[in-house]
Image (cartoon, rainbow, N blue to C red; front, side):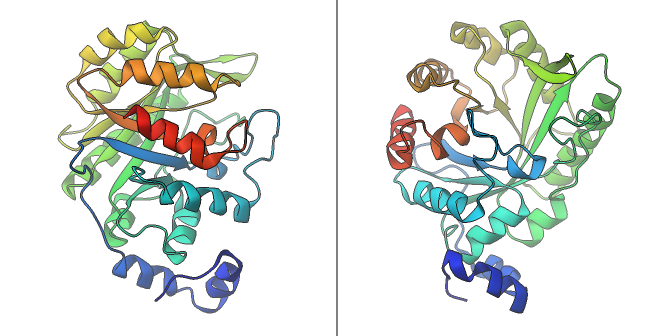
Amino acid sequence: MSSISIGDLAAVRARHPEAVAEAAAARARRPLLGDSGRLMIVAADHPARGALGVGDDGLAMANRAELLERLTLALSRPGVDGVLASADVLEDLLLLGALEHKIAMGSMNRGGLAGAAYELDDRFTGYRAEDIERLRFDAGKALLRIDYEDAGSLATLHATARAVDEMAARRLPLFIEPFISRRVRGAVRNDLSGTAVTRSVAIASGLGGTSAYTWLKLPVAEDADDMAWVCETSTLPVVLLGGETNGDQEGAYEKWRTALRMPTVRGLVVGRSLLYPADGDVAGAVDTAVGLL
């Protein structure tokens, strides 16, 4: 079917739910890596975890039409390779025709809701490997937060290892986003020291019966210079995640620029800081990030 407008999405979903499968079957695909060997992915899987805030606005990502407008603009910019999202967002983008010749990366574990007591028992409540294969999508992503004092992390480790196996059996890449985490006054906090990021890389790299299709989605360490030896922990290909910039967008760009020099680093997966930049210029933020590659 031909693409539709954002205003038509609700009607199409109500009257023609089969349109999603039809759009997925007809979508023009592309290789994971293009001629440049680099990868620029826009992330929009935050809402499915109940994480809707950007900066001081706790509901910034709650307006779906506005989010889709920002995403379609970002995807239209030169050098943007694709998008990471949960099923509802990816299917909206499919129906809008925004995923033609783009990488569609499905977010797989969304059960560890932000702020929940069970946050680190992060069940795979999103995409399964069979779903990604059926819809002709290109890759999956799994968040892996490891707290040595929270038994929920073991369940997440086990589920992630099985996801590695299931994706590899279909020759589909799985991007693992590992952290060493701990609770501080009840809230989960990720340790971004070079030592902690290194340990998370070592653990994530060894999951499953093969690492042939595993990628790592890593934060830049607190000291960006530490990334030189952090990235020596594994030969797996790496993309850098964005995360909160705390208002220092230029500082974030400089950290990414430094880390992108590492031999295993292949690109960026960035969400809120590009979709909701402080100055409101989505196209400008995206173009600057692409320029770093």
